[in-house]
Image (cartoon, rainbow, N blue to C red):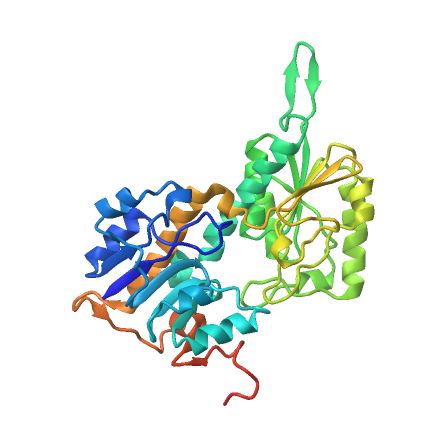
Length: 377
């Protein structure tokens, strides 16, 4: 049984899919682990560290591998080097990328999309969305503080009092809650909003004030899976008016709103940006899906009227060492599902809820019901 750790094809992706710690654990499962040279260098994980953990560091890492671990889905060059039937585990970003999913099917690999994990208790240790979003929320506030030309906490000095900065977090999922906690730790006055009623208690438990139009639609605005529902136009108008008035008074705004499989909702208009004081900062964590903020630019800090808009697409990658360490543990937990610890061989339970929920392709076909072609049986 051979497990390969690929080097990411995208030069802008600094994360790696395994750490020396998880390599050691995988060898303990009976696997031969091969790591591509330089795979972890941008995350501070050296080839020598992998070798010391029992890995074979080789340019031929992908050749003949039974399991391939990656951060992002493989490109055509990587697919061409994988054997048919290989299990490839990564964040696949399948929504709207039909050609890429089809290419994986045609290559004959069994592709598992980690972002499709079901929201069940035993899957929590594998939850890459949560581990990476947690870091994104933290880094968003750190980046905002770095761009903000003033201090965040209230300071009482002999020269006078420095008022605390006002920070508004839009979306109280994993990223939003960590952003709230980080802003609070830095001494800011924090408010937050979300369309899910359960978020109010979570926001307030972190010491922030909740801001929302709390009508009947708001009280029913969550799916059974725990995601936010798309709200009616009428509700969106009422919430937008409330938010627009609130945003005027804020120093920092962080937006985190994403709905799986859809473009990011527009939360902040150019008029709202213009209403903010010069020196204010906005951070858009949904820029990969088009962004929540009008005027955001991917991988840049845009400035309009003295207001800065931060739009880094890979916010977890800005904490590559920590992000890689957590991501590697997520993937290791998933790999354990695929291996019989007694015989130390691959033994997949194809009826496992986690396997069924994450499997995109198998035996030359797209098998996930959400992405299977309409004409497929």
